[in-house]
Image 1 (tube, rainbow, N blue to C red):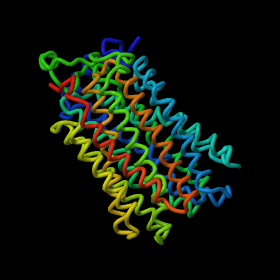
Image 2: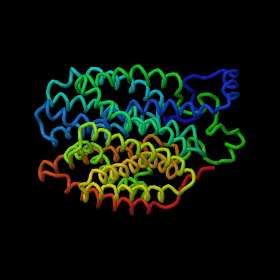
Image 3: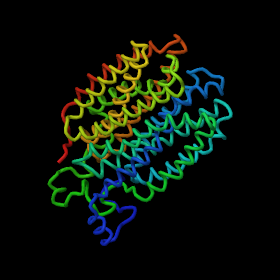
Image 4: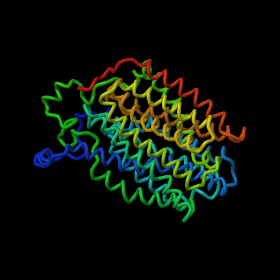
Length: 431
């Protein structure tokens, strides 16, 4: 049976505890946003946004080409794509908190045990397979479900602030990983990340995260019961997971997300390699990857703020068009400054896309089966992320440059920009 607001909460507060929560000046949902951001900071950025920094050390250690090492990331992403819908089903049934907590603890433990899985490239593939399976449990699918239940009128802003965790991680983790690799080696770098996951986000999420406001006797946005009734949408309204398969809007979204996801992830994973091939130092290239993270951070917050004010498909088309321009700069220019500008535009688009996925799912299909539907859509995005880096690596190994895959990604993002404008009006409006 789906996890509905009427089910018993994990921890039922007493009446005095609820009164104390309500007397505090800040709606508790914002503390949930902060805890979610911390959880996301120590989740996807560790395996997604640092991979470009690990790429060449892994090539040297395993005596392998870019395609072979990129295959590890592809295995990781495919595992994430397959597990995302399953995680969505578990969330709808048991609640997001019961998924996030064990996934975070196991994710940190796997990272900490890097030495066991890194003796050869085949064990490395298995290591990244395990991380990919776990990543869906510590990524945007469960946290996006939590925030969508806690907020309605301010859902866009709350999702954007939540995604600051990934944006901040994308900005900080590449340079931090480069520092750890230079001093300790790539194996110990992963182990340090694992220790940090167990030490920082695990206790914070345990203490502060609740799956929905009803767990604390509250309502979305901190609304009064009268306002909640007038608003119209309840936490359980929306389409069933099976019904969405017949929705034209859903498949248009999935196609657009897939095309942009493959393009931006291919560029993100190979960004450091692209910049070093153009003569940049390793540290400068890592800084370029961090610049992409800065743009992602801006895209997260800016998109979240605008989603509550601008029709989401138009906003998505604007950011997807920016990605097209950014890829065009990487494709057509050999000037480092232009490449950095392209990286910035790609980061903006990546920052916007994950926010927009969650928001569109909630507005077009409601919250009744949000976990399953979001898991399917996000799974397509992650699957695209598996293919993009592999295409980049294969294109380079075959031709000696990144020009061919960049040309393909340029055309793909153009198509995605058109598709996202064709999905029609919202079905579930904010109050």
